[in-house]
Each structure stands twice: as C-alpha cells, then as structure tokens.
Image (cartoon, rainbow, N blue to C red; front, side, top):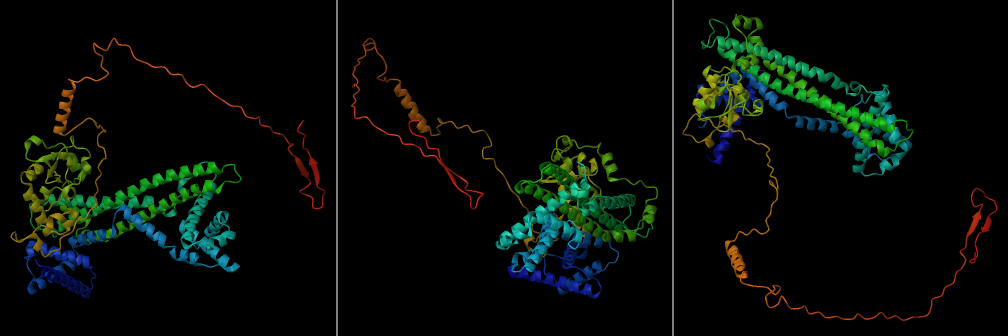
Amino acid sequence: MSVETSRARASVIKTIIGEIVQQCALRGHVVTDTLVAFMVNAVLLDPRNGFNVDRTLTEQDVQKLEELCLDKLMDQCSPSLDTIKMQMYFDMNYTSRREFLEEIHRVAESRPSALSREITDSRVKTPDESDALYRKIVAYVQLRSGMGSPTDDNALHEAAAALQSVFPQTELGAFVALLKRDKEQQLNELAMVVTGIRLFYKAGTQGGEETDLRELMPAALNEALPATSGSVENELSVSQTAAWKYTAVLEKLADYDSEPGGRDVPVVLLKQALYNLRQHEVFLKMLLSDACLCAKHVEILQTELSSQMKLLKETVKSQTAVLTAKVSPLFKSLSQLWSGLQDEAELLNILSNIMHNLQPFVASQAKMVSEAHLDGLLEASEVKTDDQRMAESSDESIVPAEMKTQEWLLPETTASLNELPLQYNGVCGYTLVDRDGLLLPGNPHIGVLQHKEKLYVFSSKEAALKFASSPDDFIAEVAEKAKHSPELIQLLKLHQELCCVSPDSEIQPEESLLVKPVTRCESGTQTDVHPVETNIVKSYEWNEWELRRKAIKLADLRTRVTHSVQTDMSHMRRENVSQTWLPKNAACQSKRDGESNVPKPQVYLAGLRGQRDGRVVKTDLTRPVDE
C-alpha cells in the first residue's frame, strides 16, 4: 500500500469520526473522539456488519457505518456501551503509582510557584518592604508545609514563630543578596526545617514519652485511609455478588439462544451485563490493590516518623541550646516523612474519586434487571462464588503424560503459580467458546497450558484437555467472540490478537484500514562481569605450533648440561679464592669551634588592660648566664 493511499484512508476515517461526533452533539449526547474511534473500529471488525476493512469504503459503506455507530452510541440502556465507556474512562484516568506520585509532586510544587517568584524577585529598600517580604516567606512556608490552611491565623502564627527561631528577620539582607537559584534552595530548606519544628512542637505538646502517631498524621489521611479501602471492598463485594448471580442464570439458560423461556430479558443483554460487572470487578481489584499498598507505605512511614521523633527528643533532651547543624537534618527528615504521608493521602483521594466515577457505568445493568427480577430468574438455582468454583476444580489436575504434545505448568513444579501473566485475564477460553460467551474464571491449580510463549488457564480438567487438543482453533474462536462483543477486547486483553485478524485471508496484514496498536515497553538486561570465579592459567597456550616449539626445546635440553653441573673431573677440585685488604680509616683534625652565651631577656608589663589612665609597671626577670 502506498503512502498516499494510507493517508487517504486515514483521512476518511477521521472525517467519519468527526461527522459522528457532530451528529451525537446535535442529538444531545456529548461523546469523545476516542470513544467514537473505538466504536468505528468495533463496527468495522464485527463480521455481522459485512464490512471489508481492507478495501476502500464506498459512500454507501460510510453511510451505513455512521448509522450503525450512531445507533450504538445513542442506546440509552446498553451495558455493552457502558462497559466501553468505563474502559475509556479508566484508561484515561488511571496510571501507575509512580506516575500518580509524580503528578502529585508536580501539582504540589506548582501551587506555591507564584509566591516563590514574588519572594525571589523582591528588592527590599524600606522597613515596610522588609516586613512584607518576611510575611510572604511565612505564607510560603505555611503553604509548603500543608499543616493547616494558609488563611488560618493560628497556623500562620505557628509558622512565623518556628521561622523566627531559624531565620530571624535581621537575616533578610543576606537573603536578598543571594542569587535567584540560591534563594529558591534556601526557601525549600526553610520550609522543611519549619515543618519539622512544628511537628516536633506538636508532638511535645501531647506530653509523655510516647507520641500518638494518629495525631501527627495529616487530617486528610486519617479520613481517607479507612474510608477508601472500605468503600472499594464494599463496591467489589456488590459487583462480585451480582456477577455470580448472572453467571448462575446464564448457566441455567445455556440452552436458550435469545429468549429465556418467555422472559423479557434476552440472553445477549444478560451476557453484556455480566461483562459489565466483570470489568467493574477487574478495575476495583486494581484500585483495592493500590489502596492496600498505600496502607503499607503509611505504616512504614509511621514507624520511621516515630523513630525520628524519639531520636530528636533524645538529642534536645535536657539541653538549653543545641547546634543547628545537629538538629536541622532531623527536622528535614521529619518534614520528608510528613510529605510522604501527604502524598499517600492524595493518592488515596485519587483512587476514591476513580471508584466513585466508575459507579455510573454499572447503572444500566442494574436498571435493566432488578435484583428481584434476577432472583426470579435464578429460582432455586445455586449461586456459586469464584472461590467455590476454584475449590471444586482444584481436585482435578492435569497429568502431563495424558498429553505429551503440550507443555504444562503444574503447582508442584512451578513457583508463584497465581502470579503468572495469564491470557484472557485469567478467564477460561474454552468455556467462552463452548458456552457462547460465558465468562468463568480459570483455575491455575488444574494446570497452566504454555502455548507459543503464552499461558492459558481453564475452569475444569475437561476444558483444559479439549482446548489443548487444538489451541489455535480455540484462540481464533475467542477472537471472533470479541468481534461480536467489543467490550471483551479490553476485558480479555485481546489487542494483539485482533490487530492481525483480517476478514480476507488473501489480503496482507499491512494493507488493513484499521490502525494497529504500537506496543511499547521498557526493558533492560544485566550481565555479570565475571559470572564464575577468575582462574587465569598463565602457562596456557592455544597455538599448537607454539606448543610444538616448546616440546622440541624441552627434548633438546635433555641432551644439554649447564656450567653448574659437577662432573667426575671437577667435583674434587678446590675452589679458587682471593683475599684483599680494606683501606684503613684516615682522618684529619682541624681547629676547635668556640661559642659564647648571652642572657635570655624576660621582661613583663603589667597594667595594660582595664585602666585608661593607669600606670604601667615594667618587671625585668632576666637572669645572668652564670646562674
């Protein structure tokens, strides 16, 4: 495909997306370009729509594509659309813990940037300007500490008192004379030291040797730490319970294609509701994991804060004055721990907001099927939890001898089996195909199939053996199921599988109209300099000709003798020696040196200090040489 053709196709898709966004806005629905682009790709991939993604779209194709996308986007009660919207929202707002903390630090540093710029650019000429500058420094320190509101008079008074102890107003002249970069550095150090002093004072006012860490923790953290984990767990429990009920209903109605025995809810909508709840469950588990990690970091920071506080109390205990260089690092350490606790509080608030913003995306399935209606569909059917299904299937285990053509990972031979990167997000691929889209969690303890460097788990031993008999066929069937239900692409992590799927096998993959995802990852390798102990043999020689030369030389030396070897003719001869006399010592005498001694003067003056008109007394204590 030429570059011009590729650009033309991309322009057509971009035009279609813009037209759909505009039509949705005219109908009173605001949608994002990302959502519309995903929906366009999903409609093109669905084989039921009859599009050939590897051919240029005609005017009729474009009109049909826009109508289908508008119908899907305008659906008022569609669990499938809500699931896609939930996936879009989560991808746009959730990231790794490291990136969350970097964003928190960036926001925290930008908040006082304007005030810092005013301080560093100030030029003090009058006493009033000096007072105004000092008040700005107090406000900056208060803003950076996060200990109370910057408009709170009591907090500002505490900050001013702590700042006065380490940076009195008389030092403003030296501060103003510094370079801008040095001013910024000193402001940051002052903020850290003042925060440490205030924390130390706050701990000291509690009395007693032990400090209540809950009193020293940020107020936001005291509120967010128990609330976030509890809220996420409650939401997760609700979603899991509903997902288990939908799973039981779909298992019961597995023999029906569209209408479950005269019920008013089609099986297709029940499956979409199950996908919606399962996706919500996946996201909540990620948020809960992050919240638990925050709790662990808070516990570590609390322990370090307690130890630093005890060390600081022992340093300043029973001392009226302490060197600044001795306590400043301790105050800074307290400030850093306090900042770490504030970061955890901010991160917990972010996770809580994401959890609350996910709730509207599970509302459609709750409106579609009420809890009473769902219980009516269940009737007397047993609702099994995921743990119960795991326990029932754990007794079944794959015997590698039954299928020697495939490679299996078993619990007794594989460490950390539950932490492996499993395909389909841990869902049984065979059940998804065999039961027309039913999601059942796989059990790694049955055995993990390793096929083409990918790992697959299954809900039963029978499912594992059937999938392993023709894995490529089942993998292709799972991809087809995802084309019919586009929300499964994200839920089962099928981006790589679907980017190579083409309706026409004769068309080359690089000629596809769809934009294929580009996979990026950070990777690194490390090689030991000396993987084994160094053992260099100096006498080693790799050249066989050199070895031959040395061998000939050694053989030739066997017929040679040296001058140090005694023979029958020489061993009885005496050794010849010669004797010499050393020269005698000679010396000459010169005249004798002479010297004389003089007295060492010792003169003292008294009355030089403390008397303006006093008399100076001179005392001579020089002793004669003879004495």
